[in-house]
Length: 105
Image (cartoon, rainbow, N blue to C red; front, top):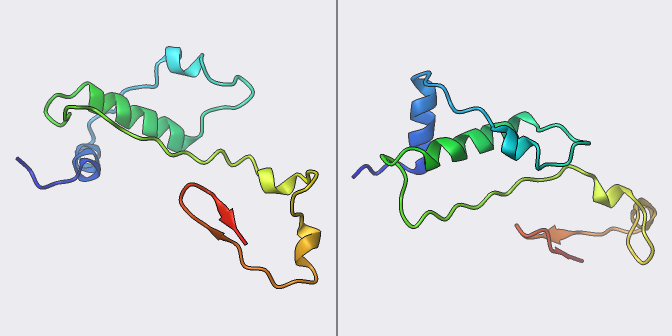
């Protein structure tokens, strides 16, 4: 068994120039039509499909996690009872956030 990580195995395939699968319409048609898939999202879906369809690298049980930022800029829209940019003008504030985006002041 190889000591390579899944990331390293997939990058090796990519370096050899082997094609990754296209994102099928069943996925594209079930996403919000107002937004197009971004390149990193297409890459992520392609890697997932490649992994699922290749028993040489697939491990069981198959448990994968996707973490994709939406980039929607939720902090830019002022809401009632929330901090705004104005809160930072006169105060020195440090925000700490963990990987789950929980903010502590």
